[in-house]
Every structure is written in structure tokens, then in C-alpha cells.
Image (cartoon, rainbow over all chains, first blue to last red; front, side):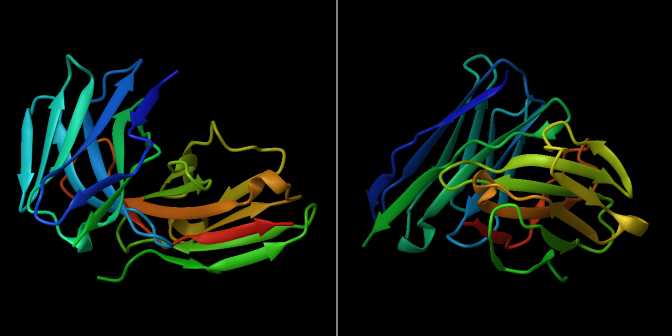
Length: 110
Length: 117
């Protein structure tokens, strides 16, 4: 069955540094992949979508890469701020549905 | 534009009782989803509607869960009878055609936190 792995441990970084989150998937080949942000007590909020034929996508301080050979997506936040602290969910599209990873919690310290 | 509306925000029930959740999606979004998110896990799809028809309910525990989307707009999700392991956040989301990747993704509501005691 499809499996999605994200860093289970929280990522703690200093303000101003670049945060890099990893998403690995197995047993399928998604046509596209989405990243969401989730704050405590709230639903996920869509951030970026990257297609299988795109290597990289950028939006303001966010950058996503998609390596279909490695079956991996990397999510980068540059010049991180305490307001970026949240859980980030990876969601590859496969079998006609989005399948969400468990998410990685990011904490940005002043 | 208005977001996805869900109610109630919180619900505490005893096991074997029944409970219902309501969702009003973004106007114009034909596709509606119900997800279950257990603490520390990612959202798991329970059921997907396209207008008022069911597209995918493969992970819906049909012996106790039911859902409907009358008139292709609002939707309700019901659990009867509830079990302790149903304690979770139930998220409703809506989207345009999910088979066409867009730059908008899914729009989620804030969810209903269910505690079964």
C-alpha cells in the first residue's frame, strides 16, 4: 500500500535560517504533490502544488522540489520567522485521492 | 470568499451514542471530502462526494459511519454507535475538480473535535 514518510521529530531552527522538510513516498507515482500548513486547532491550509514534470516551484519564501526518481519532495522556508511555526503536511496525489503524511512540526525560535 | 463552515466545533459523547457533523463547502466547489485526523497523524479520507454522488468511500467504516450530501451542497457525517477509537478531529474540505491540478488545492474547515468517553 502507499506509504508517506515525513520527519516525525519536530524541527527546531533559529529565526532567519532556512528550514528544510522532507517527504518520502513509496509504492506509487503521484502525478502531483501538495504541501499544506496546519496550525493547532485549525484545518490544513494549502501552500503549494508541484507537478511530476516540474523540478522546483517557488512562492515568496517557500520552495518545493519534486524528485520522482528518489520519490521525494523537499519543502524549504527561507529567512524563517517565528510565525512560520506550525505543522507542515505533504500530500501526494495518487489513486484518485490526496494521501496525507503525518506532518512535521516546525518551531522557529527568535 | 467565505470558507468551509463546520459545526459543531467540539463534541463530547459517551460510547455507543450517536453524533452528527455538518459541513457547508465553498460555493461552486463540486467536490466535498470528509477526513478523520487522529492526534499525531495526517488526515485520512473517509468519503468523497462529487456533487451529490459518492466517488470514494473505501475507508468509511460503513457499519457505523454514514454520510450524505443532499442537493450537492451541504453534507452531514454521522457516527452510530460511536466507539472510543472514533475520538478524532473530523475535517470537511472542498475543491474544484481534483483530477485537474490547480494552484488552489483543497479548502478545509476548522474541523469538529470529537471526544468519545
